[in-house]
Image (cartoon, rainbow, N blue to C red; front, side, top):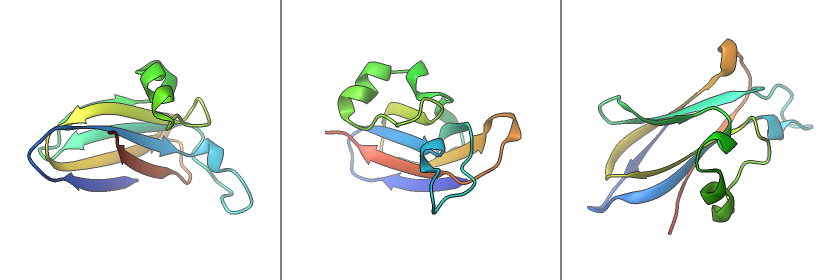
Length: 108
C-alpha cells in the first residue's frame, strides 16, 4: 500500500505515522496483513524512517502520544520532518499480503 501526504508551511513538525492491520480483524476485514512494515519516504524517494514492530523504536513517546497501535506487530514511526511531500509505504514481512490502514498524525 502506498499513501502520500504533503506537509505545508515553513516549519518542521513532529508526526506519527502508523500501519495498522492485525487489530483490524473482525466482521468487516477478513484478511488483515499479519505483520506490516512501514517506511516513510521524502519527496526524493529517500527513506526518512522505517519500522516493523512499533515497540522497537520510540516506544514510550508513542505511548505518551495516545496513538500507540493496539497490536505489537503493527508499525509506528515518530519523526520530525521538514515541509514537503512524503510517501508512506506499507508492505508485509516475508512478502505477506492482506488489508492494512496507513495513518499520519501531526503532534502538537
